[in-house]
Image (cartoon, rainbow, N blue to C red):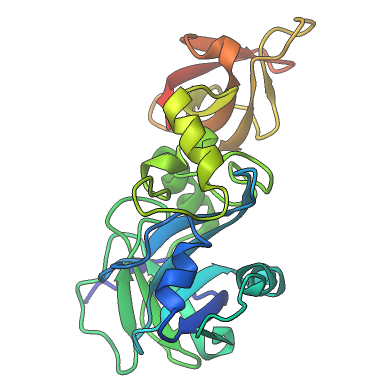
Length: 281
């Protein structure tokens, strides 16, 4: 029996298409990522305000028509379109919603089978390295082995990949979550928020940073780190893997206050357990 690729279940996403002579230049002024040559990849990118604070986390790639497509959670479509078209004035750019025409299937370990007709693929690391996005015309069916939500979360957290609504929230500074490693270009020129993010990179100072952790059973997202009654908490868990490892502990992600940057472990307030710090994301 042939094994089907292991994938996340099909999902509807927000998809905005940007085409026209000025599309590339215009988007480069709106996104933190350099969109000029995405190749066969879906590149992670931030959308920030003038203060460098996160407004949305997206992926950008070339569609089958060679237009630049910006992808995000489906519920952000209205807000994202308004934000990304706000500064269109005399630019020769045509923006179109194409969300209803496509569905996303993410193959967590890549895809090495023939692609069905009309389907196109872009490399993407959504929950671990070496994944692939398959974009299916609406109504297309592919044979897959669907991964459970619990397994997908465990893989994402173990791979130290921040998730929207967990580690990534509107108003935060992207470098706090390590997004300066793969979602921010410091060489492409000006974009909204660029001055602030460049200043943070030069100064190298943040008040909090996202860390990879191992926590005892019973710990959950939202748990505070540090001694109860201490003058100032040392951090907070944002995600805890549903599945334990062989030792019975759970992979986790959480923000550490700068006072705890050098700590090796921290108590989980009100739980009686420990959070062991593995390193920063």
